[in-house]
Amino acid sequence: MKNIIVLSALLCAMSGFAQDKKNDVAVRKVVPIEVEVLNEDPIKINAPTLDLKSSLITGFKSGNAKLIARYFSANIDISLLEKENLYSKSQGEQVLNTFFTEHKPSSFSIDHEGKSSSIKYYIGTLTTSKAKFRITINTKLVNGVELISHLTIEKED
Image (cartoon, rainbow, N blue to C red; front, side):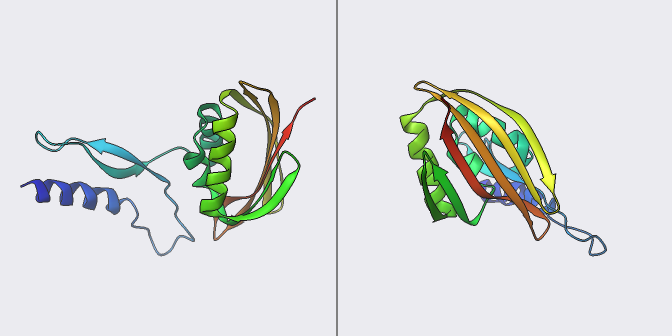
């Protein structure tokens, strides 16, 4: 019975990914949610979640590197306090997680955003327990999906 309930929940979650072939690309972002299965530990399935901008705000406010890294391109250029390097998606998440461990966020706001052809950018202010930082995020469209290609974190004077 447990397997049937779990399988049903997963099939329902996956049905949201079906798309009409006439449309270019349909993208649905997902996030784990907990589902209780008859007197047992909760399990996680995927469900729709926030868009990129909302995820950036939530991720930086809470110091959630995993939420932000969902939108990293396969390789991401990170400039962190004047040290720049190209990282894989998982390495970039680790770098950001280390930053959040050292600088616990207390607030974040996007102060400006703009667009130029297929490139979009966000500029924000991150306030942490130690200092204020200027965050610049460059995104690009990859197969119709907006992904972060460059992340810059600079200490404000």
